[in-house]
Length: 477
Image 1 (cartoon, rainbow, N blue to C red):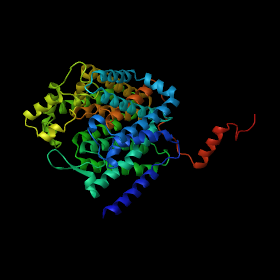
Image 2 (cartoon, rainbow, N blue to C red):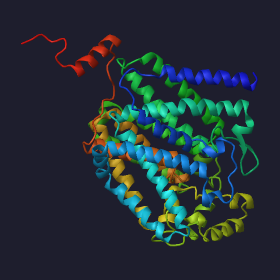
Image 3 (cartoon, rainbow, N blue to C red):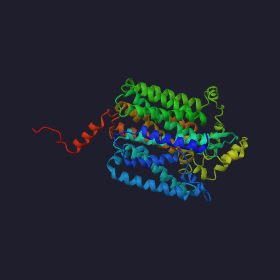
Image 4 (tube, helix red, strand yellow):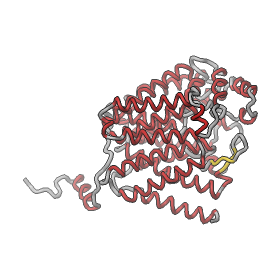
């Protein structure tokens, strides 16, 4: 099959999946297109790369005008939407006080960044992440909003990734640091592809479980077909991306979705704590402390975690200020990076790999480098608070709570080997979504209806008419 015919087939397939997954009710807010576009860009490639434009100057310092304009426009529109939902937005922000403290400290840390202007721009983009999450969380039904937004993104990105890899290798493949061919799909590297597939596939599993356990769900048959196809694309791309961390996190998230979504778990928080703490502790000991090199090698990765065992201490030694860090997103723009690079070169690392490295491959060390011990303590407080809210949300809404808990646990584990708490990262956006929605449910700010019963079109229209005129169809007293 040649590339043009394959493109046509995939285009019809994507349109078909979007058609199969549609729902008559409840109606989706048009504002959900804003976080949908935001997440789609972050989970794939910057718009500058998509249009084939070559950035001029130092893009890391200056950014690109096109990307900046698009993100600014999306953020401005998001603020308008949140302004109209100010009551719900204020309630959710008050329910996430520690998150506000964290963002506040990030803003203060701009003052001591080596490039304050760059740090401030990145902080504004971080506010964009939060604004998009708040649009979803303040929707009339945030559970449905998450499902629709992420599914729409997945129906476009996952099939297109497979199309690029199979039929457009110049777009869908690249070379890793060792010179081996790496499948990148619609992203820029295989780890990014793995992360995108992980998060979208986790939502697909969540959707499938809900549809399978609720026979009365609207349009159940065709939605099962659409979500099953989405998960099939995800499983296929997991094998092509070959990202061991993302595969392990997907298994963890799927297990938690199934286990913690059972009725017996909703009324037994102790069981939830036992399952989650045990799994997270096992993953942490295996990945971070080297407690299981045999297991790591069984997964297809060397015991040094692809060089991470050398990267982590080198990054810690190069930290500019142990207490307050180098400023928000500022370490990799500071002179201390040269100390980090020198130590790796002394250990025999390949020079092009060292000069191209711009993350510590550990989310907690990344926060330490940029925000110091204060930032790490604030992050830990957010994660613990988010975990406790997730457990409480299971009691209030078992189906939504299981997803919130799984997303939180995946973010905690993913951060052990990847920089998962960085601005405009899909992992960070999903964590924010779990934190905001979990706090809202746990503190009674939001009530959700997980499943709507099946109704005929005539009955649905009758309900709409009665909502406009409550006396229609009623007998007089």
